[in-house]
Image (cartoon, rainbow, N blue to C red):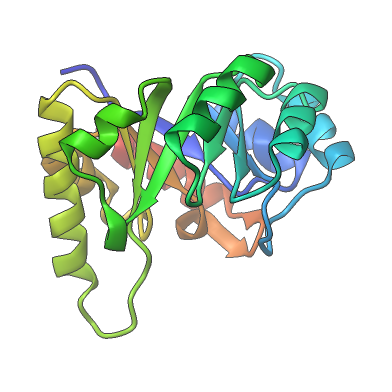
Length: 209
């Protein structure tokens, strides 16, 4: 199986985008949904200009279709990530109107079965997101999500794995999940939206090991 791709998400600064791209990130993610890392159109355009040769992913959550289409076009993103309860029909409309491939995300508490995934016929990729827990069960929860990613990958789907990833566990996540890509955000930050170049470098080295 080919190496896992790396997406660095929650980018809010052009400098961080350039560092991530320079270290070999395959995707840069900017968040247009409600979040401490949310960016406006102007900032997204600045990030786009800073890394013109790295695919840019726009992240949305349960937003109006017209808004998603407009921002995807005006920010010149390469892919649209839908991180809420968007339906298969909504994903169809995003692809048809925005003309960008869709990444449909699901959180760990609502992972879809094979039949549910098949209904998202126009989604090019899926993302399974492990939210951090506070009960000390992170390792067990991560293992369950990674195992589900591996099963889904064996069915031929291209799946990103996200959530609670950092330099200490990304190599194990890739080994156990066989993910198409890993998605990191908080695990390489100094503060929300501010990436740590040293942590990014360690993460990329571990992901490529």
